[in-house]
Length: 75
Image 1 (cartoon, helix red, strand yellow):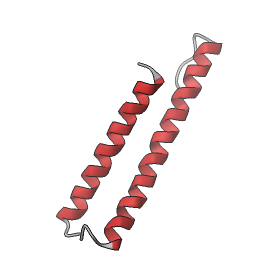
Image 2 (tube, rainbow, N blue to C red; image 1 turned 180 degrees about the vertical axis):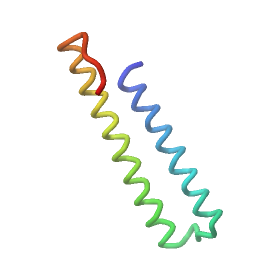
Image 3 (tube, rainbow, N blue to C red; image 1 turned 90 degrees about the vertical axis):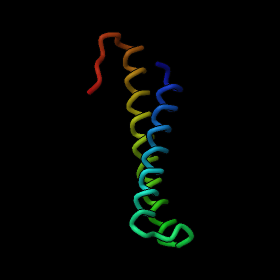
Image 4 (cartoon, rainbow, N blue to C red; image 1 turned 30 degrees about the vertical axis):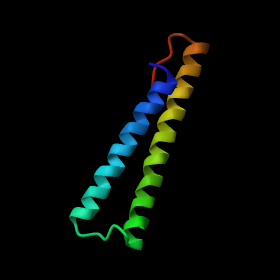
């Protein structure tokens, strides 16, 4: 798997999680046009993006370590 493929997979999971969260908010009666719905969704989207960015940075570091030391492992 390439870093681009890993990023695409992380983006897919991020988007699925955000969609599931939006559905849960709506099922709880949130107003899709309401400010609170947008604020909650935006906050969660920011958290998910931070998760994706951190995961990608870890993968980049791992790839770099593997290039420098072929026996490197994830930690």
